[in-house]
Image (cartoon, rainbow, N blue to C red; front, side, top):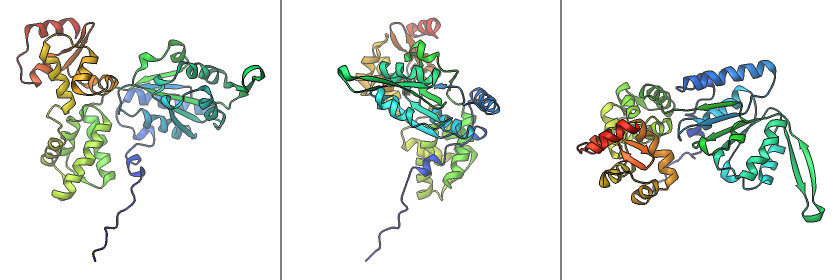
Length: 337
């Protein structure tokens, strides 16, 4: 009787291994890395916790990775949660009261915090104290707890949704932008080495070029193309193998997915501005997903433009669909881009 294959248990360690551990290993986002390295060095010299940090930008650019790197640079414990998980002040109080001195509290999707929880953070961020309510009704008592100094690192794809009082409490505010193909190729070279797959520069360059400026997409594409290379191409990724794998994934020559192409086709139908809600219904995606995940790259490449009346197809979008650019699209480009 044949024996079942000896599978190795998979854990998240393999995925986490692709993430850099220190600022010196982080590729791209040079100004952000420089500023954070300087802030960490100064705080360590003063023997103080790092000032509170707000990281913004599209998904998949390394905000979570940078939060954990800041903990490593400051030799501090990192506690991680997310805005949607903090439903009431008591949820936050339990986390804050358990922090060690100098700890890093990382809140992902910090823009999703409820206002009452956000306001509860004010005194914790400024004065390192919180007020806890004990009991209910007439027997309610308020006790003020002193917290050890800590660093709050918030990550958001929607910085504009943070209230001005909240945003002003972050001493360090940095925005991450989409990566260039050269930086993504360097990231992929390191990831390929860690994944144990041979990769030619041409193959990595092709993956980088079609990863829409996002490190997460580049690494995800690399993992899937590694499967193809392992099974059919001697565990080696050449330019031809990369092209074959990306085609299997539905990633076209411009790095667009099927959802991207649906968005562009939707905008091409009426030849007038289209609202986000209409686009979401047409392509079958959530409005927030379209706005945070798909639009930044389409806007950067000139395929889509936002106007006060709605979204319009840019000149590059018309050309990508193989359609002639109508005169009204030329006018829109001149006015809004």
